[in-house]
Amino acid sequence: MKIDVRILLFTNLLMGILVFFVQNKHMGTFSFILALILMIISGLYKESINYIILYIILSYFGDFLALFGNNGIFMYIDTVAFMILAVFPLTMIGTIMAKTIKINEFISTLEQIKISKNIIIALAVAFSYIPTLKEEYFRIKENMKLRGINLSIISI
Image (cartoon, rainbow, N blue to C red; front, side, top):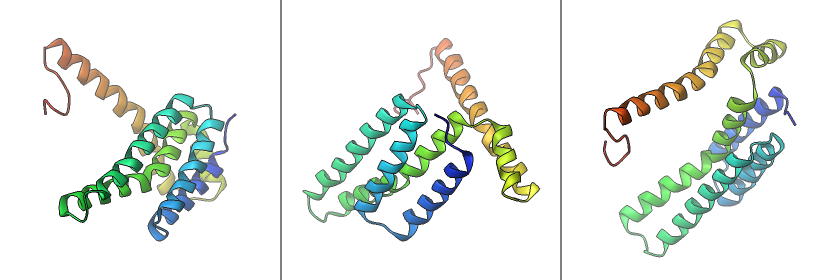
C-alpha cells in the first residue's frame, strides 16, 4: 500500500521535532515502532528487518557499555549510539520516501500545500540526487574491484 506523501512529510517533521525536544529511550522506541509500521505498510520488508537488527544491536550495545561504568570513552560511545538511535526513525521515513515516491508526486504534493517554488526546486534536486549517488557508488566500487582495489572501511 502506498502512503500519501503529506503523511510522510508530516510524520518526518513531527519525529524530527520529537528527536530534539524529547530525548528519552521510551520516546525513541515509540517513534521507531511508528516508523517501522509505516515501512511495513509501504512493503519495505527487507529494509524493515535490517533496521530492526541495527536497532536491537545499538540498543543493547549502549546497555552493554553501561556495565563498564562511567569511563570517558564508554560514555562517549554510548552517547553516539544513543544519537544514532534517535535519528533512526527519520532515516527510516527517508528510506520510505526515497524508495516509494516519484519526484513528480513529491513536487505536486509540495505545490498543493503551497510551498515556495524555490524550496520545491531545491528539495526536488536533492531528492533526485539520492538514486544517482547510489548508482555512482556502485560504479566506483565495481571499477575499483576490476582494478584489484578493495573498497572497504578497513582499506580506507
